[in-house]
Image (cartoon, rainbow over all chains, first blue to last red):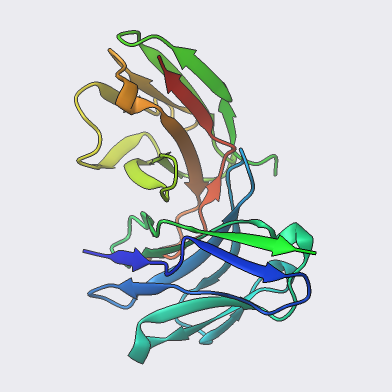
Length: 114
Length: 116
């Protein structure tokens, strides 16, 4: 069975500071990994995904994530936070079973202060 | 593309009533997923369709829940005899099968259900 652990239900940063949101996964097969962002009362929007190509993945809005197999991690980073980045972020994993159903972490709320 | 749409966006109902939600996926997507999201949690998988066939159901999907995708296009999720524990956001997502998995799922805005 797959699982995702997101460390920290809330992360607070100042505008312009580094953003680091942590994600560790458990999977018995090489996984596909995703980061989604959710703004209040909206659905989820894909930020980026890892599908076994380059281990450093660049996404939208300046975000990137690095797949580290030895650490079973897929942490999300952004060099400089913007007020508009305040939202909830979800890490998710799917396997290569063919159905591609996603298993999500509990999410991390990113708070950005001026 | 016009994105995934869901209707209604909000639904308030009394315990014991039946409710039905609709999802219209991106037109060329043959895969459709339903997820449920409760407060403070990530979305949890409910069920999956490939074209009109329902291929996988989660243990979360009790007998009171039923989903259909009659012509391989839009899908409906019905909850019979609603309970307060059914209160949640119901999310629909669609994707185009790519073979081997890992394709991107595109999510709709969700239907927020409140059972009184």
